[in-house]
Image (cartoon, rainbow, N blue to C red; front, top):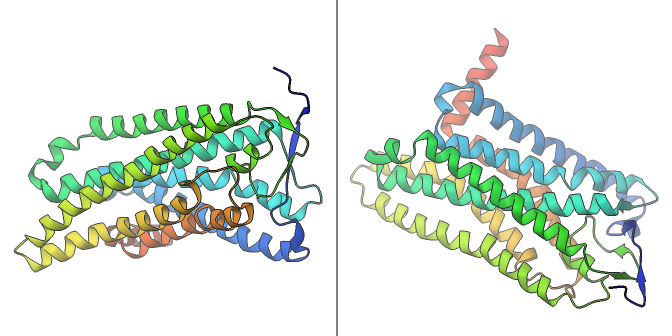
Length: 310
């Protein structure tokens, strides 16, 4: 169906930082440093979990997958944002926009799913330690991760295909620093209610339901830890879970503020400022949290450094 005022859109203009003038150069270096730190930190986790045999366990396999997803998530947004900060024409092609939406939803869904699986892993390890090796066998944890990638791919494909299938009328300007669904829907000249309802359901399933499952698991974990007779055992159990709890709090706290109510008429300025927290800064903090609060990780890093010296 051809709409009366429909226009062919070959590219979108991203104007989030266009009014900042020379300050864009400072933002370029801030975001570049944050991006490089995030990529290097997460790849260091991947390297350690692969070469150090003491880290060949389900928990570190899930952590490795989470690191891959975080690198993919931030890489689908930040490089193009850095280019636009230094460019006069802050544009992204239609196909580039579709790819960006796909990978944002894809890697974001992978992160949500892996956080659930990591909570289940800790639940089995602490609440049923004698059965841990039997329950969390290699076949199961590889299957869990594979299922997460497949489900996330389907979510990303459906979302990116649907949001760009609407007719656009007039302006192709987006007040954001990447192709996010709500500001694109704002350009549409047709009713987007069905998509917004579907998006709300997906957001609920991908954010709120996993958070409830994680909360349920950790209530049981904390109850089990408090029943331990050994003070040292309780300390080790809490130390094992503390890094994960901080990461989950940062991830869900920042992402839910932006995506739990995906209305096309929400304030674009508020949306892109909130988006910076979970797109740029939260992934940067995760490697720090896992390296500083994880004794096994610090020991593995020390061994790697000693090997390189000799």
